[in-house]
Image (cartoon, rainbow, N blue to C red; front, side, top):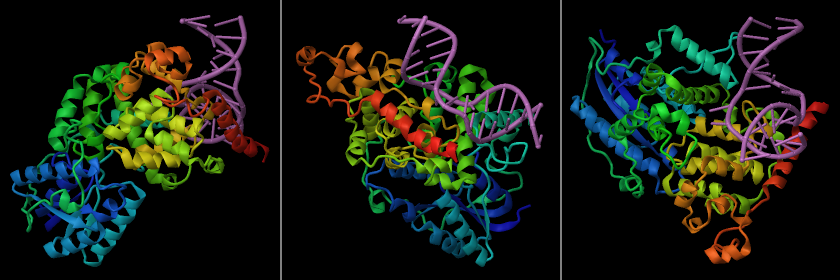
Length: 484
DNA sequence: TTTTGAGTTGTTCGA
DNA sequence: GTCGAACAACTCAAA
């Protein structure tokens, strides 16, 4: 029996029509179900450029979602404006009794949703926001003392235990497309998807990069990854190799369901699948942290680290952003980011360590740059990753978190295949010198046509000295605390 | 309440 | 080149 005559499903970062909590609940509770997506100007206006792969990805995914909903008798109403105002207005116009939208954990989204809920409430319309984008959220995995975990390993243990206790797939079962005795999708009163240009954006190189948006792109990438999940543990640290899943962008925009991914990894078992499942647990962990500790968006997870005296060094930041630090692995990684909007996870750690620990620049500056560039940018994961690298987050251990950019290069790109791909000007260098080109004897530099300081930058800092400065920087804060 | 064990992904040093 | 220990000692989470 349906409780409502009509309901509205508001799609945000969940651009699929299967295994979808809000869509399922709406169909369960309402006789007629409308669907809407808003190109939210409150978000779009903040983007640094009008050429943005994320917007193109969303645009393509929305087109596909609309087609899928049409095939089921419904369709997607696509709006362009302030979601905060558009959703309550639309809900009234359509005469629905409830709006369903999957729960979001970002501080700004929580404020927006609270305002929407309040406006809807004034009109007697319910706002329902079920859990969808994580396996376990907020208060589902807590310590014995009832507090949120702040250390990953015990969190993961509790997370896995909770899943296992429920028989493995209880929490991972997909929501059916059509609940028994439920309502039906109905077409929107106005059809049509605005073109990218109408939204004020220009096309990107998304297609050239082979990034396919939408549920079809997600399905293809997911199927491909399943064939190599068992090798994930062995290969994931080598950026020149196809070792990681490349599913982050699909998880970011919900073109895949986290339950489906986790269920598959859980069922498969084995080293590769277990390691990958751990990464999905990290994802839940960071969402949970952001939800419970929203101050991390701007400040350090551990407040004492807000006292760290980072350097204000615009030229250093620019060199890092543009990939001309003189450290090939760092520069190749930044080139990958700038050209494709993607960066391998190992390299995200390397460049984050380099910015904060070698250049002494605040993690917030790096986080902001990533936010503008990454196709898969997600506040929770990006912030968590940066704070981990900067040693200001959970498990802060500065003396463990200073990566040696040359050692990392030798270890994880031993033949320099990744470096040569993104820094063709270094292609002629022998492997031996590729990771630290400044060690190449000057005569050989001329012979190979790679003169340091001319054809490729000299190292912007000396790692050993930078390391000492960083340890002193942390000592000033931690040592100061000890004396109190 | 007190105690105990452990902490994603490392680096450096010296033998 | 390889290997084990030291790094510094705090905080968290469970027993």
